[in-house]
Every structure is written in C-alpha cells, then in structure tokens.
Length: 230
Length: 225
Image (cartoon, rainbow over all chains, first blue to last red; front, top):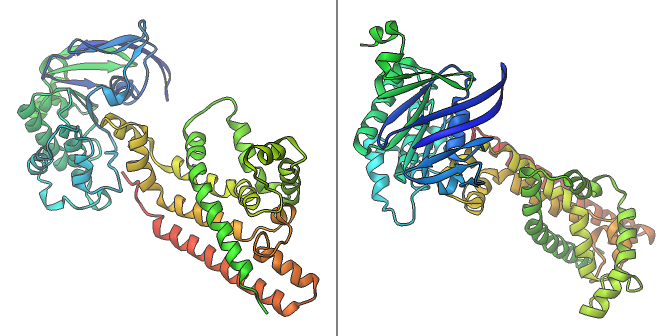
C-alpha cells in the first residue's frame, strides 16, 4: 500500500498541514506513532475513505483508492478495509456474534465468525449485547468484526488505549497472534511506545502532521522505554 | 348520548395520517439530519411551521388550495375526480401537513443521537446507506421512532381548527370527536360534551404516559463506548 496524502487539519493546537508519504509492504504491521493531535486518526480516516484528503493518492495492490488529480475517491464500502475504532463502535442492537457477522461478504462462510470467536475467546458471550461487555471484551469483538471479512488492509486506531495495563498486554497478544496467522497489511495508530515495540516491525513517528523519523522500533524509539519493556 | 361514530372516524383519520406520515417523515428527517444544503433552513422552517401557526390559518390556505375553483383543487377534480374539501381524504392530507413536525422532529433527533462512529463502522464493513439505515440506524433509534409515531397519532386525534376549516361537520365523513364535542357545546348538550371531553382527556393522558414510559425505558446507555 502506497500512501501520499496532504490535508489541512484543524487541531486543538491550531492549523496543521498534514503531508504523509509512506509505503506498507504486503503483510507488514506498520505503526504510526505520535502524540495526540498529530493527525494520526485523520490519516487512518483518509485511508478508510471516511475523510477526503485535499490532494495526493492512495494505491493498494495496484488498485487506486484515491487520486485527487484524477478525481478518484473510492467509497469506504468498496475499499476492503477493516477498521478497529478507538471507542469500539460496536452496534448496540446486535449481539457479539451478530456484530462480527455483520461485515461478512456474501460469499464468505459463517465459519469465519466461529473461528474468530474461538481465537478471541469470545465463545461464552456470543449472544450477549455490547452494553454488558467489559472494555477488553468490547475491543476483542471490534477486532474480530474488522477481521471477519478478511480485508486487504487492517486499520487499528489506538486499539488498546482505553484498557488498563494488564488488559492492554492481553489485547496486544491477540493482535499479534491474529496478525501472525493472517498476515494482513496492517496500520496501527498509537501513542504508546510499548505497543509499537511489541507489535510493529516498522514505525513512522508523526508530529504536527509530518513524518519526523522512521525505522524499526529499536532504531526509532527512546532506548530507555525499550529497556524498561524487555 | 355519546355517538361512537366520531370516535371511529377519529381513529381512522389518525391511523391513515400516521401511516402516511411515517413513510414521508423518515426520508425528510434523514435528509435534515445528515445533509447540509443551502435550502435546508427553509425546509426545516416549512416542516416546523404547523407548530406555531394557528390551525385556522393553515386550514384557510388548505381550503383555498383544495377548492375546485382554484388551480390545484381544480386539477385534482378534473384529472382524478378527487375532491378534498369537506371529504375524508382532504382531512387526511390536512392532518399529514399539520402533524408533520410532530413526527419529523423526534425522528431527526433520533438520527442525530446515533454516534457517527457507528455509521462509519457500518460503511467500512461494506454496507451502503440503505443497509446502514435498516440494520444500524433504525434499530438504535427505536425510542425516537415510537415517540414520533405516538405524538403524531395523538396530535391528529386532538385536531380541531384545521379539521373544522377543511371538513366542517359531516357525520361519518368529517365529524371527528373534537368537532362533535364543539357541536354538543353549541347545542348546550353538556352531558354529551362532557363525555366526549372526558374520553379525549383520558386518551391524551394515556398517550403521554406511554411516551414518557417508553423514553424512560430506552434512555439507556446504548451508546456507552
């Protein structure tokens, strides 16, 4: 996936000229790391098709999802992405199973759902509505829902930020095992340095809408944080 | 003695109006909640006009529009052989216009209360606007749907001014309960008037009680992240 996007954003700190250019290899898990208000979530929304960039292009496996110059902006429905939103965004009217099955494509078997329920240890609560789930359970359902349709690109927006430390590590293990199993091209948005180190093979540091550093987590992240982690 | 015919006619009018209102209010409320276009304030003002306009004013203009002597009424008369003045179909159309804000506004609020993240999630899961409406929006705004429907139904039951202007008081055609009550008072039949008024009062209270009970039941934490 090749992303080259520009957009003027209005953040709390004022106006930001976002300009991002990066590539994610097939099956890679890339982290977009930076402080709040740096433009990470906007970048994710642009890739998902929920927000239009002012200029630039997005290419995925030779398919053009967005090209401002050519007037192309493929709708989110046709982009084949899976998104895990920061606040889960589970459908309150549906059970856990119904939430996960909602995104299945017409030709996909319901065994996709069963498999994910199993892997995410959600079997005991398949018929429970989201309001009765804990934060960790909700986030697992959100990840399973995004994965069920086997999208080309998986976008994770701060998937563990709402969880306490113990649950965060567990959720990271779920993400890691799911990624190792399916090798999906994944973009992880986070401001948690330990999350980057645990999950990503490569990290882009973003500040005020631009990439200020990139490389492997060991090259890029503060050494002290990594020492504390391992 | 209380004649049951006005009650049957009133319920029939409320039922027809509510069904038609439901069908036209959903797309109007959806458009007002999710789109922004230049004429939106004009549409919102037009839809809400019956809230503040005296019913007799609305009735007067509808009477002019429906008159076979005028362009619109004449067109309906010549083309469809349809007369709307002093007829039941005329009452239904007037009720729909008069009760429109009572259904559109709760629906519009219902749409707006749904977090946009749910709509985004549905879109990224490959679902179009219609699927999202049916499977995500409508089931999560049940309270607004029920409130709007009940309010519009109840409002039609209590109509007087518009009905009087458009329908007059033709037994079993346009003589609804509120008109029957007025006629009984004019004729100084206070016993019958009291019965009509008492039944309307009890009905109105029951309707509002239902609305508030439903709202309490649904004022839940559905959208808690």
